[in-house]
Amino acid sequence: MRFINPIPFVGDIDRSRIFYETVLGLTIREDFGDFVLFEGGFAIHEGRALERTIWRQDLSPGEPYGRKNVLLYFEDDDVDAAFARIAPHVELIHPIELQAWGQRVFRFYDPDGHAIEIGEPQDLGAAGTAA
Image 1 (cartoon, rainbow, N blue to C red):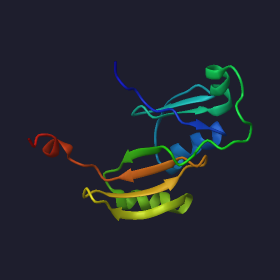
Image 2: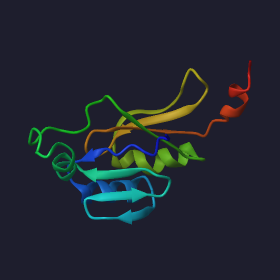
Image 3: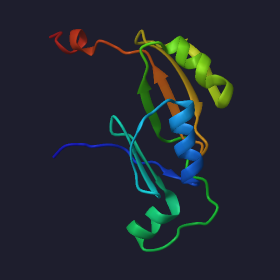
Image 4: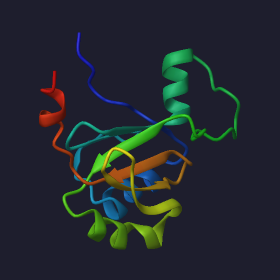
């Protein structure tokens, strides 16, 4: 078995597709209307359509999807440039901060309230080989 990707439910697929494509700069691999797959494996799905597919019913109408219990993580080779490009278009959780593990990251919300973290790449190979 292998993990493939998370699929956050979104309230407005067009708004979210535009957000991830234009604000975050992701490239669309496939757009199936109510499901959009981006290069790298990240995907979004129109929530009401997915609710009907999975649970065979609409869940609480109007209830927001982002509930501050999942963090979508992305990396960018130039976290400062990513922050300058993205920050004016989002509700920031916090600007770039150095984390306890030595990585610089910033966090914000997408249009549905999902928390997103953009961090600089880390070389985990050295940490993973320590015995």
